[in-house]
Amino acid sequence: MNIKTLKWLGTFFVLVGILLTNLNFYPINIFFHGFGVCVWTLAGYLSKDKAVLTNFGLQIPLFGIGFFNLII
Image (tube, rainbow, N blue to C red):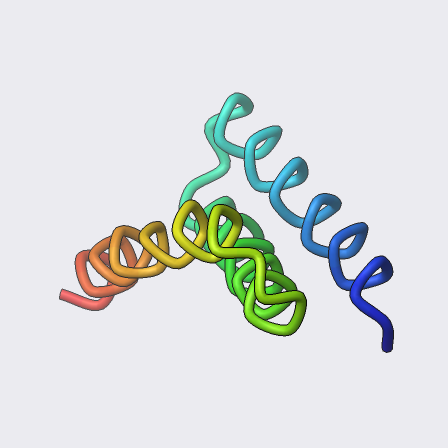
């Protein structure tokens, strides 16, 4: 899978996650958005794009907090 495809896939999941958040579908929204963030982080790493990697990479711990709160 090339980087361009990863970016489109990540964008799809991030946007679906945002839509689900606006429609108040919790907790499925954090799964979609979190997966999109992970895909974008991977794309940033593979393309060596530090701005993308910083933006999405720093969101991973925030989604981790959401997953943690869901479990507890």
